Length: 229
Image 1 (spheres, rainbow, N blue to C red):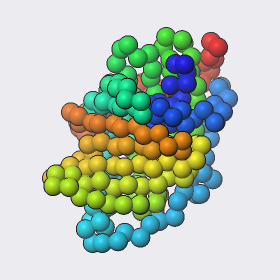
Image 2: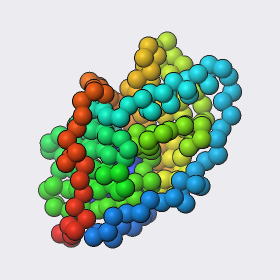
Image 3: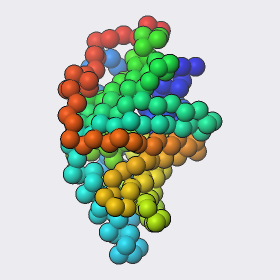
């Protein structure tokens, strides 16, 4: 059961729908090659309907492309209402670590090429192509939401703006991601992923620090490691 949850965590960052269950892990012992074909088959650019929407997309791109590191806390809610929390570490391009607080035994680490899902309790590790995750908006070096995804909707509230995008290159099918930004400085505050099975996962960020530089050793994957299963 924990392995099932672990795979879902990686696909939508704890997506209850177990979106990665349909895919096979990469053979350990070899770094995963970038899935260029999957990227090329991403959704075509959408037409941004209004000047306000176009401005929101530009500000979102500026936020993502303006950061090289990010450290923050997260609280994640899965489709069945379960909540987990932990620490997020990001270093571009492509390096990411979700460190889940106890009692969760899970870690998710991206090293720029691959994503490893580790279960500390079971001493297991599965490795997947980084391009198969729906988290390209965090990992990509030069992001253009209208080019790299399909923009479905832009909506504004008094204090926040949400941009809904579609990514057809994720493993198992199409994922739809809603990104929410604070209006004053357009900092990302949360995202929601609707995975190919229709399950929703919500992640809320807090205490974001874009100046702190994480230790590079936090993003290392041991490709020689074998599962204990």
